[in-house]
Image 1 (tube, rainbow, N blue to C red):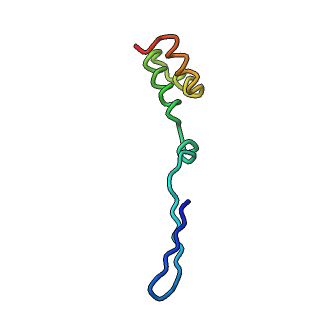
Image 2 (tube, rainbow, N blue to C red):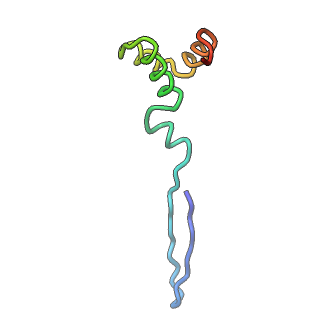
Image 3 (cartoon, one colour):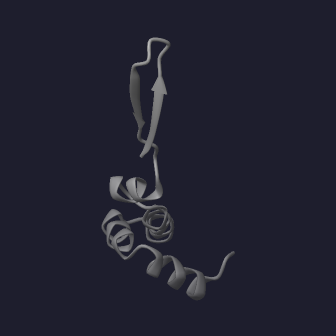
Length: 73
């Protein structure tokens, strides 16, 4: 959160608050990149939505397993 104090010509102090986007908000907000990648790899390999959901839950663990097992072809 960014706070900025601005003084007007008549001497009033106005406090302006801005909230930026940080990585914590992005992670809390939805599917992470690792989960998305795991689901895409899983669906392309197995053509199954259920497997894709399971592998999305496993996230980076499945991505690393996939890279070791099937290589980066």
